[in-house]
Length: 181
Image (cartoon, rainbow, N blue to C red; front, side):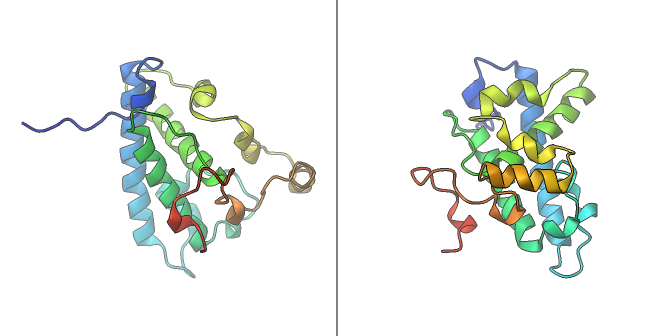
């Protein structure tokens, strides 16, 4: 007899309805598949990043050049890692901005999946449950770039996408493939 696949959101079984967990689970599967498809489409100098399937929910940067080839590969790893953590019995919050963005992408896809199944799921309702804070949502702000840069400098926030993979704390390291060491 086959062992059932663990349903995403295992750590939140008491706080989430089954349909919510199923929407998150299917979003993880869809995004894993789209991420793998996107990686196959990537060529360091030729990729049109706007056309990659898994980039639909990325923050609205002023220039797609900010999303480099290496950045997209690192973000893909974050999508895989957050998908893996969602199936674990104990929740481990995102450890860097890249993981926060990856989890947000999964939750945005879950919103779409829930809607297709006739439910309403608002990713913002899950921020307190799945994130240490909601600060990452500032990356989705539509404020002018110069104001965004000023705020980021004032609060020592890593604004550039290539800096999103720095761990928040030394006692919670990120995936070794995300480090340059």
